[in-house]
Image (cartoon, rainbow, N blue to C red):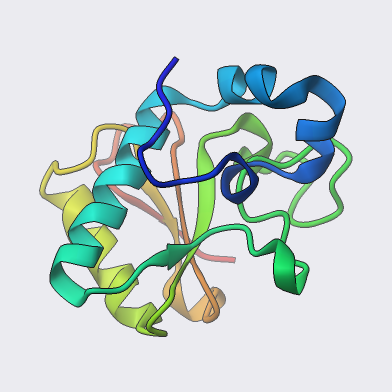
Length: 144
């Protein structure tokens, strides 16, 4: 079972899931390649900007930016967040546009193994949505 070196489970999964099935089973449901891509993004972002990246921020009530339970009201009913391979990222330093372009470049240049989908930046100004869908394109930008 792969666990990224500097992400906590509460950053990656909704507390309802962790409470219902436990930590070990929650880790088992997270997509390994997505976790590896998250680690690559965080490492390279830190190397370039000296800043971290948030996913879930329970201290301010943001608990649905990673793996969501089936009954979660955030996002669409069939959201890929509910498949444990999509995440909403927020840079600690506030450089959201830069993070969007940074991840987009990484996908386009084959630096990430799994992630191939992002939401259009103008539709999600407070975070960067990145995930996986079964597509033929190298990168799909979803317009809401």
